[in-house]
Image (cartoon, rainbow, N blue to C red; front, side):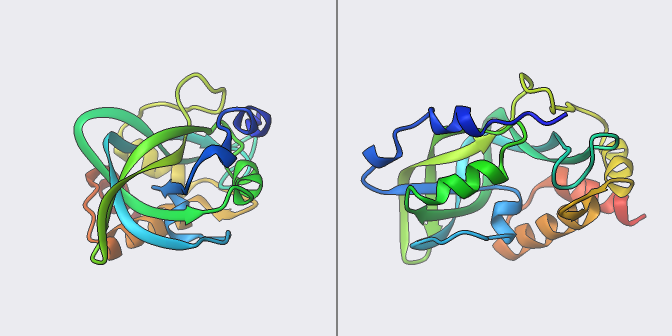
Length: 188
């Protein structure tokens, strides 16, 4: 089951209408930067939190055994830390393909927290919500860790995704109890 969102994403925003385009990464886009960018900055978005609730049939799992990857859910008063990239419109052809399994582009306000610049910018983010067929939804953090431990796909072990994300968040100085608790269960 693949929920191909490439065509939908190409129709969502007129990318050439932006004076500058910022992309916010909160999952593998933090540590697997396989696209050109003009500049990058640590940052956060408000009102969202990361959750391992999206199925991955194309990268960290298979049709028979989907992996679990992060998406965002609304959460009043919360901040989700990640990495922001200033990019050109042409990188979205690649990114729309990379994020095609249920993720749609949305506009979001990003607070850049780089020492050289602390400001708010309008940016784009990929979010997979419960309306897509690949959405796995909530489970206990222990169950999510067990699921991740038993999944792998064309992009590698699902556990590698979790461990790389946890490491990257620590390097950013970000605390994410959900990610770190799942990591702890995985390592037991």
